[in-house]
Amino acid sequence: MPLAENVRYTFADVLGWDGPERYELLDGEAVMLATPSRVHQEIVSELTRQFGNYLEGKKCRVYPAPFAVRLFEKDNDSPEAAGTMVEPDVSVVCDPDKLDDLGCKGAPDLVVEVLSPSSQRHDRMVKFNLYQRAGVKEYWIADPANQVIQSFALENGVYVIKELGTKDSIMRVHALNGCFIDLSKVFSD
View 1 (tube, rainbow, N blue to C red):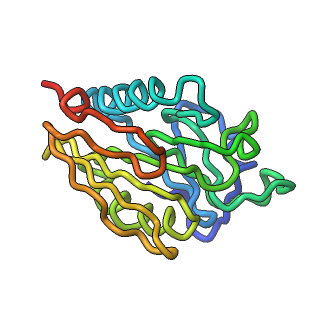
View 2 (spheres, rainbow, N blue to C red):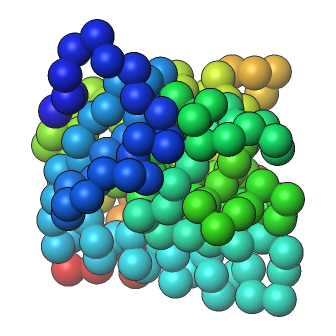
């Protein structure tokens, strides 16, 4: 649900807002995030656990939402300069220089979005194009209703579908050499 029209917000504005609501910024437009379902959170938790286990002792880190990702922010930018900020359900960041106390400045190496009835179009189109433009190396779209995950990898600036994993699949993570995710644990009943 967008806020007032013709107002351009920045990450600095979001940092100053009180209340339990969470927002993303898309080119200055604030979009309120819906409360995730239990199944959504179970999928996020399991993916975070499996990524975390693989990344133990490595320089990459995994972060579940809420985790602010300012996709186009550069090193010396202030929060007032960031007009785009998203909260992927799961983010994997391998460059420690992109991390600060507020989250991630720049594109993570991998992001996962878990679909909900209200986020289908947003995650499949808006965020797909946004992550592609920002240079996120790998994008996963998890669909709880159909118990599948689509993985896309960035090749020559364009996302190419790599896999369609089902409930019984072991999915390869293309952005993390040697990492595989067991979807039977992600989509457990």
